[in-house]
Amino acid sequence: VSRSFAVDTAVERIQQGSYAAAIAPGWDIGGNANGGYLLAIAARAIALETGRPDPVTITAHYLSPGRPGPLSAEVRAVKQGKRFGVATAALYCASQPVLQALGTFGDLGQAETGVQRIEAQPPDLPPADECVRHSVEHGAPAMYQGLDLRLHPEDAGFRHGEPSGELRVRGWFRFADAGSVDTLGLLLAVDAFPPTSFNARLPVAWTPTIELTTHVRARPVPGWLRATFSSRFVSGGFVEEDGEIWDASGRLVAQSRQLALLPLAVAEKS
Amino acid sequence: VSRSFAVDTAVERIQQGSYAAAIAPGWDIGGNANGGYLLAIAARAIALETGRPDPVTITAHYLSPGRPGPLSAEVRAVKQGKRFGVATAALYCASQPVLQALGTFGDLGQAETGVQRIEAQPPDLPPADECVRHSVEHGAPAMYQGLDLRLHPEDAGFRHGEPSGELRVRGWFRFADAGSVDTLGLLLAVDAFPPTSFNARLPVAWTPTIELTTHVRARPVPGWLRATFSSRFVSGGFVEEDGEIWDASGRLVAQSRQLALLPLAVAEKS
Image (tube, rainbow over the protein chains, first blue to last red):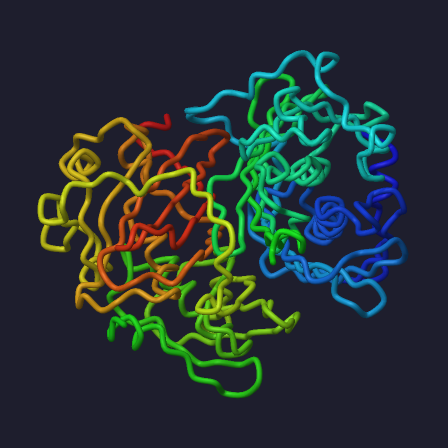
């Protein structure tokens, strides 16, 4: 497991339902902590509270930006069943609510195998060293210091003012320390790529996430993850973004969807 | 608005955060209330508590089957912002938790118009009277008494033992009384169609929903809704189901995804 990710998402149990954590510096985009990073902290607290290691499905609604410093997590188990535990979690920065989450957790090490039917393929990517590293040195936000993210060359043009025109971003994902990605790390991975709207020639300044839902379908094997994100509906000031993460064995390990706001750039709005 | 749906999902405010409701008879599948119907009740309580009429994005995790009788709803507003209110809701049947929900609500009558980019089409359906009515008289569960649901003939073969083989179900949706569908009604619509697995030649007995997330993208205009549901990933005992609902003006009004369990038929499992 990535040591920096494990340390930077650590939670400490204070008493039943109460956890202490911190937003570590370096997981931000322009000062605000990444939504997937915050969700991983909430999920770690739920995993401890329910005694179930894996988020089978988890949803976060984002309430206010998270900035580096202490966090508290309040977790409430709403059901402890034979196979799954369901819990809510709230993260607070001082007394400010940052995130509200709801998840069903289980043990994906014990998942039934059963019937398989997969009607999709992992994204077709050039080898990682022929992709474009989205690095801090080349203008990516601070968060990318902890990540090794390689964009498909066709989807990386937005970095130099030549967006592809497609609502799509594909690439490779791993931690910068090459530590393996566990099922909590997947919650970061689904929110770690630049937004699809950056490739869409829309006058978009930024796309704050309202809500992010992730289904974790399996524990990833060690190695690079392949990811693809796309959007089909830009309307009414909203955009959805659908993600798929595939592991090095070619298995779908996570499916995500988020709903984001589409604030238009001020200059273009008038 | 459909009178029976409005009456059967009514909630009464007892005090701040506490609502009384009931699971009305006739919204069940084999005795258990439909998940979308239950979610509509929870959403109505959230709408009252937050003073925001429309579920912009709402997620429910299902905890135990709901049977006809009194319900109580506990709602907690976690944020009241300028544009959106965020709240959790729990439904209880006696003291048994039935459903836990988390939603961001707003007013979609005031939605910004802004940039539009839609990379999809409503499903291509034969006219409603050339489709197959999924009615109680022809073996559909009790819930379909209140609905007028017409399946695409290509997707209706599972009704007589001839599933299409595709993980897909398309059709028309309205209430049996032809009352219009509001944004709470959409929460029923996204869970009202037979599961895609019925068309998949899988040895599946039933697919209990673990979690259902719906983005409501606009208020539907009056008239028939067009719906399409599909699944791409059957693995590890889980299946996702993606839905889109389009209104009579050709606008996408809701996008949904659920994660369901895939218990295999006992006879086939051995």
